[in-house]
Amino acid sequence: MWIKGQIDSYIPTLKVHNPREITLVCDATFYAKRKDKIGTLVFKDTTRKDVLIWKHIQTEKVIEYKDLKQQLLKLGYVIKSVTFDGKRGLTKLFKDYPVQMCHFHQKKIIQRYITKYPRLQAGKDLKKVMYNLTTTTEGRFTKKLDDWFIIYEDFTEELTVNPITGECFYKHQKLRAAYRSLRANLPYLFTYKNHKDLSIPNTTNNIDGGTFSPMKKLINVHSGMSRELRFKLVDEYLANYKKK
Image (cartoon, rainbow, N blue to C red):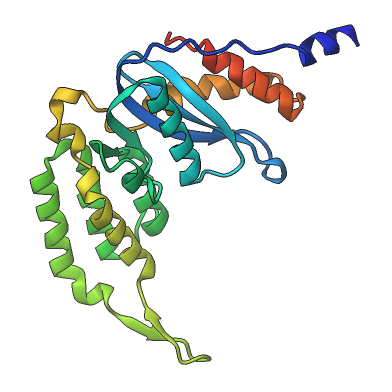
């Protein structure tokens, strides 16, 4: 009982801030069962590999990002750029800064729509366009995407009819969604090359693998902890986070 009391009364270390210009990466991770979903949203400066600010969340909403952004600015940090996973609404929230869409997440979005091994030729060709994302320029990538659309525009516009309701819908909805995702995110896929002086990362890997991965291992070691103790563990870890 004494040990439990000591743990329960423990107050995690407070983050020591050093306001400055930062190259920001934002992402969230979840680490509980679906019925008890909890997670943490983290803002990190990739220049110094420094976790700046975080918030425990149940769902990943733009309002949570807005809250941390306001706190960060209030502390005196100056944002030079932002890299995130493309969550809808974040480009508007960070419209005053150079914004980079994570290439890894963009590839995952396309893969989710057309699968890892597309059956349709249109899907195979779109995958080829996507494959060169990290090695090409914005101009060449745009040209390849335009060429793909010229070839497959009619194909993507094909309609089919529900025999029961009579309702018409696009026959290749997932293929259309994959293309539209690339088209919508295109202005944010090459920011890191268009602003080379800012050293913007083109993925959120610095935070996904560099910060979240060891954090989750730590949580798993103590998997029997209550929600409150998990938060304390995460708070202590992030407040003292040091890049190995």
